[in-house]
Image 1 (cartoon, rainbow, N blue to C red):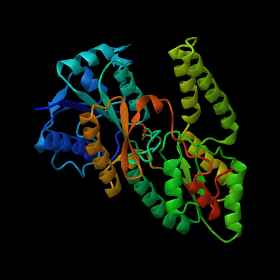
Image 2: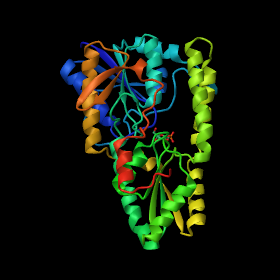
Image 3: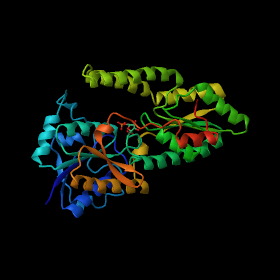
Image 4: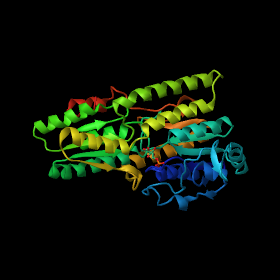
Length: 381
Ligand code: F6P
């Protein structure tokens, strides 16, 4: 056997993970005669040495299955809860990597995983990552796997909500996941024909939302569908967000110049998360406020984790398989500390140092935004 590679899935699960594991595994075993070791539950499994040999039989029949056969967790190597204490377990992870004689470690995950993998690569591990998340917010790749499936689920939900909204002459507000990026709500909102779409990148003005619905009513439409991203913020809170983001940028700059500490960055991040983290209650408040301002009945549907479950779409399977297979070629060429990104039809290794800490938000001049505006969809501004 030529090389031994490890593989793990970290962060929130997303459809297409098994397709990617299969793409990596089949290529590694079949085309390069490599040994593949899977680690359970993300970085925790690597720390606890919970490993399984992945052979051809384990990689067979998993393409269409949702979730991840390896399990996942949001544990970070440098801040792991062990015996009731938060500890830096990086050294244990490095030891386990060495004890397994790994030539490379493949980490499948979103933005957080890219960061954690980058930390490990700085400790000398040969790390290659793949971009997965339903949020599509990983910097440096055109697309993440999981997004297309979630987009389909959210779009179908909006389709189905139309008939009941129409029958009862109601406003229906559907909350879509996406963390602090609006790709999912915007994509599903446009594809599903939502009348109002609210995303984190465009702080919303409740007066503008209510007026858009009243206008529809005056024109004879007896119902309205509002697609709201879980990270969307009312305009009043956007100012606080701007301040917190400026603090984060300053903390990062200070850290780079040697004057700042990791804690300042973490604190600024926590402030941003707290501002965004009102979803659910914000959506309920939006519903009550719209009812009050329009005199129309309003209902809320929170799609939540439904969007992450079940069979991956054909596009996600294709993307995950394509990137998975390309990952092994990247390993074989000895290129490490990279994420295998999707760029058009190509799979491109992008240095992790160029992407970590960055988020791919929806640009305000993105064609999906322009399209929404062209067809008269209100964006709350
Ligand atoms: O990052 C994927 C995602 O599903 C986000 O859209 C959402 O904000 C978050 O994960 C939910 O996390 P958890 O699975 O920990 O509830």
